[in-house]
Image (cartoon, rainbow, N blue to C red; front, side, top):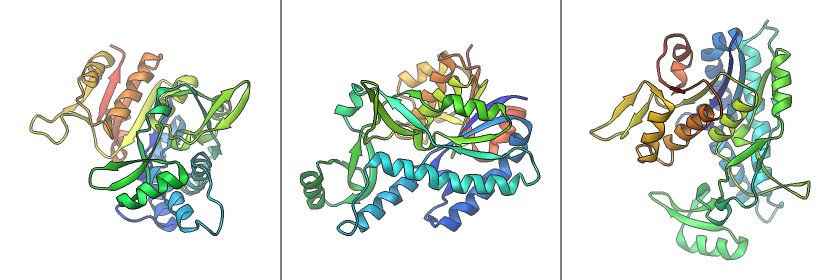
Length: 308
C-alpha cells in the first residue's frame, strides 16, 4: 500500500460560473468517483485550494459592510477550510459507502516567517475587481495594497510567504496510520507567525501546492500528486514551441524553471512545489489532470518528476 498526498485545486470544485453550494457539492462527488479506486487501495491524504471559495467569502464581507464587522483574511481562509471540507467529506463518504476508510477534516495552521520578504512585496491578487476611484478610496480607508491586474481592473494584493512548517502534520500522519482519510491544508492552511512562543494569524495567502509539498515530506509520503487542469506540464505553454513533459528529473525540471519556461501565475508554483518535494527527500512528484489521476499512477501518464 503506497502513501500519497493528492493536492486538488480550489477550481476543481467549480466549473465555469457554477458557484452555488449544490453545484460545488455535485462537482466534489464527481471528483471522488474518479479517485475512488486509488483511495481504497492506498494511504491517501487530500489537500485542496480555496481561491474561488475564499473570494466568495470576501464578496460576502463586502456586501455586508456596515451591517456586520468584516473578518480578517486569515479568518476567511479558516472559514473556507471548514466549508470546503464539509463538501469533500460528504462526497467521499457517499462514494466510499461501506468502506472502513472514513474521511476526517484536520483544520490546518501553517507557520510562516514574519521576516519573509513577501510581507514587504504583496503579489497575490484576491477578492473582487474595482475601478480606480474605488481602489484609491479602499487604500485610504482600509490600508489595503491594490494593483491593476491585466483585464481585471484594480484588485487587492496580499503577501504570499513561503510555508515553514505545518503544525498539524503529526495529527495527519496519526490519522492516516489509523486508516482514516485526512482532508487538510486547505488553501495552504491558515498563515500564522510564532513570536516569543505566541501564535498570531496574519493576512496572507500561502500557496497550497507549496504547503502540500511540505506536508508530503513531513509525513514521509513516497509520492506527491498535484491535480490541475492539464494532463502534463508544458514548456512554452500555448506558444508555437509548446512541448509536453513526460518523465523527467528534478535537475532537468529545475533548469527549465530557472529559465522561466512556466507561467508564473499558474504552472510555475506547481513545478516549484514538485521540485521542493524531491529536494527534501521525496521519491516522485506527479503533475497531471484530475481525469488522469489514476492512470498517472497505474500507467505513467502525466508529468513524473524523479530524483535522477
